[in-house]
Image (cartoon, rainbow, N blue to C red):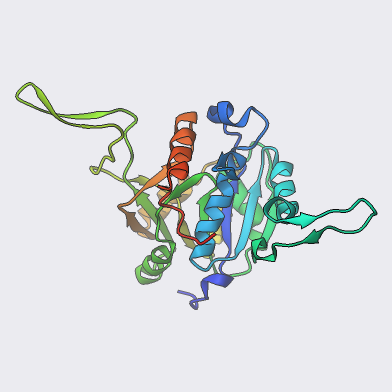
Length: 272
């Protein structure tokens, strides 16, 4: 294993090239999926705030569909987040809320419209200046202990670590006894299995040995690379028993916004 860098020096690769075709009711066909909002802020912003709360500050964003929208959001970030006074004599705005400025270092990389996640990671490899990197999707939030992901990865001593979550049922679950419903759960978490929740940590050798040899850049990470990594005994499990939800559908968007509005957004463990 390589030396243990402080997390502030470990880059976080964010997969943000999706179209979000099942989120058109929320995006109006005008936004890339990572820019669909929760509580008025893009879901991508929420993911980045989660990582920053655990000490990470270097991000590499894999752009695809309408990547210019993501670039413009962050280029205009200070204006969008802060208070300022503007005069019309050509002077620059006077900002009054310097505390809104993040200390993020963000590299934006155009990785193609139809590129798969294998190709996207390969295209950002030159910007990953450390021997380890984090990787996650730009549309999934939860009360994931990202510091624990790092600890689990380093303790496991393997090339990769994946955070596994329990899937949430799309349907109400009823517990029945003697012809009577004794318990009804609207959206229960199914504790009988694990699914990929993202929030990966990898050694750089994952790119060199498992991605670089693949010629098909339309391939997804969940196909050959992660399957081979698992067969080689090089994939550590980081089990997450808490809340996690990927914002894939309009229903997911509605649920996450309800949680935010009610002050029940368990993934918000940063201070305003």
